[in-house]
Length: 72
Image (cartoon, rainbow, N blue to C red):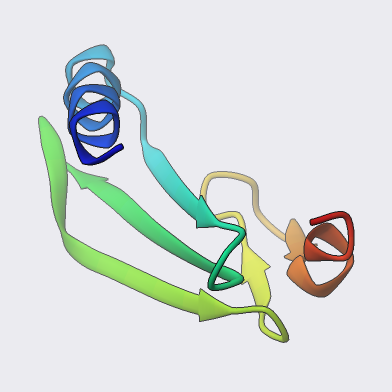
């Protein structure tokens, strides 16, 4: 699984994706990385199931992960 995540990370970075989410349904957590220049930077957020997760590229958009994880 880690190889798939690494490959996806590199492809998204190369494509210029501005915000990259890794959602883990087992731990009910979300890791969010933000682009800095030409790559994902050191800015990394870790959210848990009860945390509202802001979508940094969409002003005012917040995802209720508790509702999203209810389907897992």
